[in-house]
Length: 364
Image (cartoon, rainbow, N blue to C red):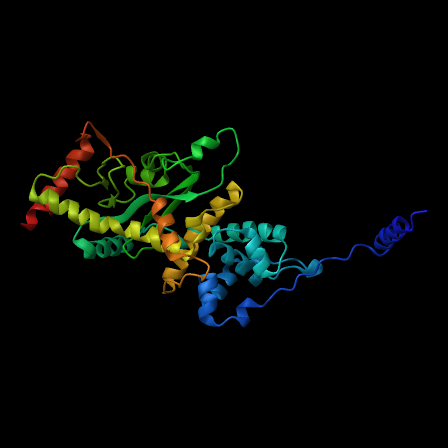
């Protein structure tokens, strides 16, 4: 008789009789244990703002009881913020927070969706006459460009291949898979509109043409207001782009003022991705969760700006030079809306000419 095999069988029977012991994770209390600066560095928001945010979404995160070592809402929120502040590896977040990988995956989806639900209250266009006038005045202070209420552009958020039949539509012109995110911000670098659902191969102009923002401007909901964008967009009476071949002094002044004023959205993308590095490194999550993460990060950015938070220092594991390269890789300039080097003609082009005559030729 093989006594070794017999002893092994006895051990198996003993395990079956007493059940396999559960794995217990020890969770650190990061909120109370970390000094304020380290907390800010690792979770990208101050403790005060985290508590403010928790009050807005806690009802979506609470469990009906404490059975099975349920994760408290504050720890769910910190787990998600920790993922946003890293290169997007769930395993490293699980180790840091003392949780199982599958638990972290469920928490990130749940919390991201809860934060994204705050979009209507946090990310919104100016509506009243007073709000519109204030927004226009703030833009005018940058470079004396009148009537502007928003600067718009697209940025690419890297994702893994969706692995479906039409996966290649997510491959952008820099040959990686991405979501092309359209965002518009005001002069205070707060998002006022974000669209995050289009695959990376989609042209910026296509996203705008199918957006609610275009519909609202076409219906004159924002009268006497202007959007600024780059040359990848077509010119309209409410949407101005740079002149491709400025000839007169007025046109040169227009271009200079346009570039300086529109630069607010390009700087905003850089600040946004430095606060939440996952947007630069890429989201290794399911596509629906990725879209929720993007919107959630936009909401969090606005909350931070509204509460006057400074830009947090980068975590120790993030290389600043590498992060900057990834940020720049996400800014993919679109092909200018021109044919054979000549700009498209039409009502929008003529409106831009008259706009330059009215506002920029007068300056000299």
